Image 1 (cartoon, rainbow, N blue to C red):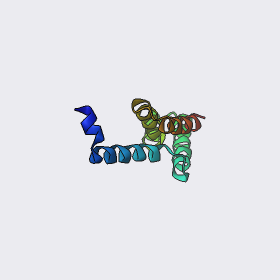
Image 2 (cartoon, helix red, strand yellow):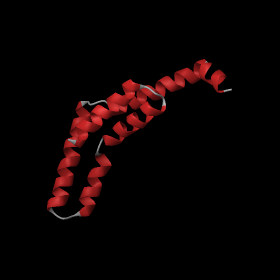
Image 3 (tube, rainbow, N blue to C red):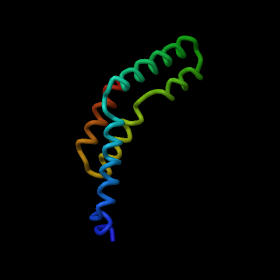
Image 4 (cartoon, one colour):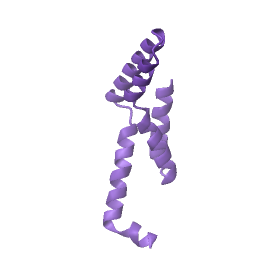
Length: 95
């Protein structure tokens, strides 16, 4: 049953759309860098002011969730390109 599902045109189109969406969410674009910069600034200000709510607020705008999704989804479907895109952007985000 699984093979017939995967062979259908709609299933392939849906999987391709999901893969593209996950890959696009993990790419390092200008928006990725700006979200990363401003979330770091907000977290630093929260640490300097000893305000844990500011640190928690910085987590709301950080772009690392797309990277984590790309890593886990790339491993789940055995797509190394998606996995490596997520790993690269996650590494940059951690640095």
